[in-house]
Length: 358
Image 1: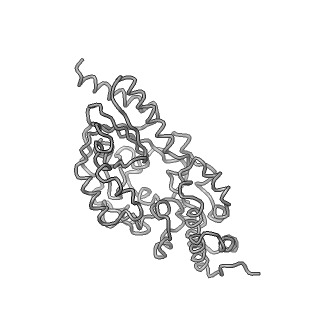
Image 2: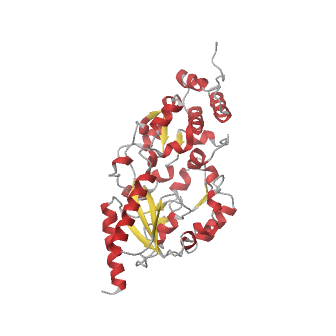
Image 3: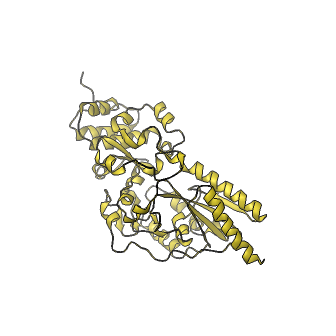
């Protein structure tokens, strides 16, 4: 058997092993990302990355895999579905006193699960091939994961900047394995199947899309509630509704997501009833409760102070009730100036004084 045939056979084995590990699809790309590096440069130059300095920190390594890991010839891109079943996201968004948490983070932190599975896959490839070098990544290095996945044929980067797969929509995680094995590359996804649809652009609560395929992260609710460390612009607060960690609106309206399948991964199932939690109840969590109930969750990364900041904004947008006002007043003297600022704003929306009456 020729070397080319051996690598073709290995590629098929990789797909079989990945399926056994719970991945829904594998694509293989070379390291040429075409126009994506130039797009990234323009996006950064426009300042659309906001406080995410790490997006500009690593120079060309983010868009040139061979510079990040010298010797890299191929990138394996893998996707894993995460949509929890029966979480009724639209129903929660319509309940202004409920907390909307992005569906990807209702369960355990995906980084750990996918990183472990990728490591297992890399070990199996190494054992079978008896050669090669491998590095696995899940949001842990400067990697243009959606560009790589598009190059690997897993889907197209859509108008909402998400990766869409024609058979699976966009409710999935991505992970990568960099290798120096010359595996046969899959044909890239060249065509974007969004057509004239602009549902995702029009639904965005904060009008974060400058245009199709162009997101100004500084206005994106996912950025504001997760990446942004400081004060949330008062202009944007009323537009955030009850979204306290991330936002799924542009995925919820995407016609392609009618093909999305609920996850079979138990770790991605909701924990602590966070799929249907009251804003007031979450706001009254003390820090030890927050740490306990977000253990092993991606939510913990924002910390307790930003958790309260986000909830204060949502409470400012919720219907006025005595319990809501009392909850806000109980945090009016919080040690954090960031929390106090957003609590005061929220109380002003309900025309309530910042302090409890004596």
